[in-house]
Image (cartoon, rainbow, N blue to C red; front, side, top):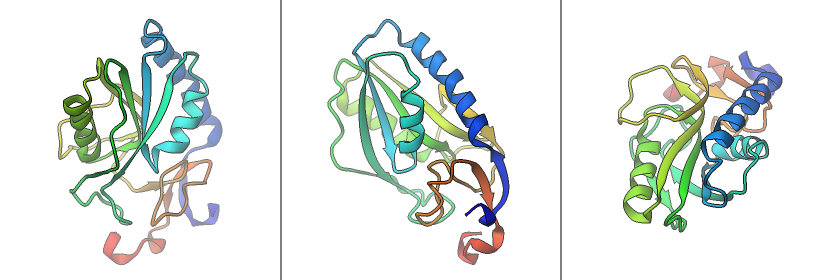
Length: 184
């Protein structure tokens, strides 16, 4: 799989060092809400990020996951965000939404709005592994960002191309010739 990468942007050791820093920030911020923090990870991309980061957060908290689709196997958001299944009960709780990447902003804006409008949380903040440096289709910003990247397609550490490469322990760019012509 490493041979499929054009370049590695972040090695595992760099990712873990940054997760240590993020965990300290999150722990400080939520230290007074003991037991009232719900981490809501957007599947599938946010799962590895959530698991590794939350093991470093020194607070009692709850994990929930939410299935959302907007990419459908390509390299760009389809523009249509579908929340699959029920939203978790987070009434009166602080919610930390976690996703792998803040790109167009559509997914995180839609999920944040639905959680705020339908679930009556105390607060909703966003934590992402990657934030692309680009204009967004939707106004949304992340409260916690592990890394900022240029507007390029990346895989690894939970990020995929057509369902593959999520299990790479690094974040890198895929060789162009491996991306289908209609996705370039």
